[in-house]
Amino acid sequence: MTQEMTIDARGLACPIPVIRVKKALESIPQGRVVVLVDEQVAVENVTRLAAYMRCSHQCAACEGGFRIILGKPGSGREGP
Amino acid sequence: MATQGQCDLLQLTEHCGCGAKLPAADLHEILSGLPASRDPRLLVGPATFDDAAVYRLRDDCLLVQTVDFFPPVASDPEAFGRIAAANALSDIYAMGGRPVTALALMCLPSKQVPLDAARAIVHGATEKLAEAGALLVGGHTLEDPQLKFGLSVTGLVEPGHILSNAGARPGDMLVLTKPLGTGLTVTAAKAGLAPASLVEEANRWMSALNRAAAEAAVQSGAHAATDITGFGLLGHSWQMAKASGVRMRFHAGQVPLLESALEFASMGLVPAGAYANRLFLDGRVRICEKVPLALQDVLFDPQTSGGLLICLPAESVEKFRQAASGQRECRCAVVGQVEEGDAEPRLLVEM
Image 1 (cartoon, one colour):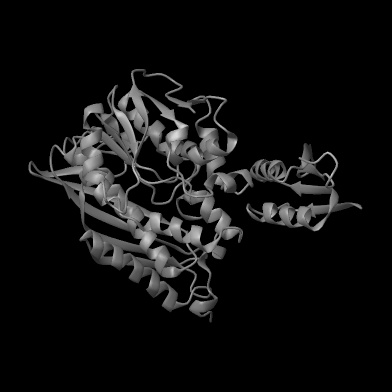
Image 2: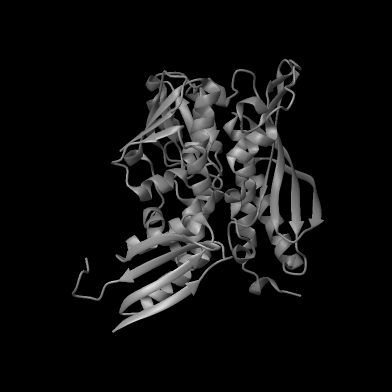
């Protein structure tokens, strides 16, 4: 089943945003995780994690920082 | 009051070890316009971004001075003390000197960090100083919201043995003496994602003295050396290339790495300092696109108590290897060479 979660990691220094996003992605079989961060370092690190976990990622600037949308494919479709 | 058992030092800090250094660009701004000393007794000063200053007391007696302190880089207080001491001593070794005395600097949040943990930090440092043959002769402590510890070390160097940043010559080989990836491993440890065995291995490398590497460098006629710390392999190499008026070519695939450093980089456990280092070197380094992003991250990773980067004449590499062989503190590899060229990009990185 597809799930959606939002993680607000603004104001948190790395590696905390990465830890939270990793836990969120591991907790769902497939779906979307929206991440809010306010530092370029967090954008870079969350993007690396997304590639590592074979998730899609899109990042856009938003008020107060950046919004990253991660997509976790279900097993068997569009996976590695 | 907290007890030592509850006190994980790594969780008390945002920036770990040498990763807490101010970005190189900020340091350059702070130091710009500083009047240069014309005292002929100052042989090595701030102008060459060197590891330590060298001052001539007498013709046969040169003084080497350095200071280095930082927030925790290990969970265990004694390990933190050992690493902080090895890191501070390294600046003396990187100049070709031998340490003699040290003064301790400690900033202590005494409500969070119990006094027995503070004592363990000093104990760890004293152990390393004894190994180096140097004495702890005093220090200074402050109450502070952020725990920090380190040493100011004074040493001696023989005339003719100074390994400055400014001596690299075209044709020299670049030898690195410890594996890279301590910043990444410490970040992974802080995130709870590094197995204990890898943290132990990183701690062992960070605690290792650069004495054997420096002695081998002096014996084999090295032209220049620096120790790799917060600005990462490429940041410190750039400082040496600039001070020497040369270009350096690296072979990224030859660089020794800590186990799992690449995986930690791929997972996004890259410390903020690595991004600051990359930003500072924008336009100053050209990296071949064949070098994977994770390996690039390791080359920018801020090291704590990293190895020496030594510039050796090509014909001396074998002599150096023999002198350094069998030393547990060294894992030596030729990682590149020095070339002619006094313009940016000074650093070229190939696979």
